[in-house]
Image 1 (cartoon, one colour):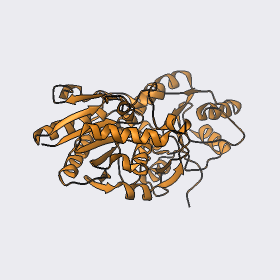
Image 2: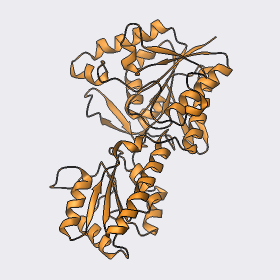
Image 3: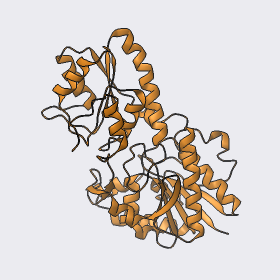
Image 4: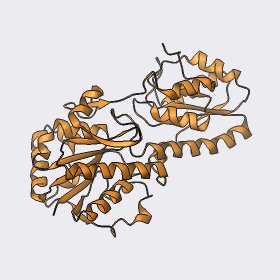
Length: 360
């Protein structure tokens, strides 16, 4: 009988509980035992490790829609990779994690995380030697290479769309524009997708240069005197500092355009998990369990069209744009961005949305 562990790491998002439930149910169908590691790698730092036995009753099906993670994603009071790096204790920290995992006597570990967590898993893969490591990608940023979708992205798009739906009502009442700042870090996929869904009149993302004078001309030329301008948090404006939405808002105000900056912030990472994220969770959980059955290790589940397959962490890492992590100097993460041939860019242009300079 196999014994597998599950842990969620990095930022939270909707869909995590859906994945946990599907893994537990699928594992129980196979006669396997499942434990959950509380607080991710932070929980492994405790002696003994902070774990919980998982079965169908611990996370019943009616609760899988809930955002966040039953297992939590980390504890600021505990040691983690970032703290260990700042204290020059990474080697000791990694050894602690490896010892803790060995004490649990797991046959496999399912790690549900974003590009930082997956990059860490590959760089410090010796931590997971002796067991089957299968990773499931989750992030609202959609900044991981080799998968068409990540857990949590669709729900974040839904949350942003509903947020803008409500803003448009007050925007219309007051003849006002709203500059809405999305999450996404250096990837504009969330802003682009939610912007198209919400009917934004302009979408500014880090991957495409823009001219504020052109943006202003575009807004002034609109038939309406209200609407939404979607701004990704990763954009920059030369000679200006502060939050991107505030910077754009000030430019619009100076041009005589009545507007307000709006910040949905963490509601993007919350909300009941939408059906497409639940389906993706089921597909990726099933793919992860098959990988464990087949003895695979150091792999990531990836959506390829409508099918889910595994790719090696080495392939994942090599496929992205590798850049230094701002919080862990020793780490380089593999990142994906909005590509110039992204179909939604053509959709946006056809709909008359200002997205910046024309692509070549």
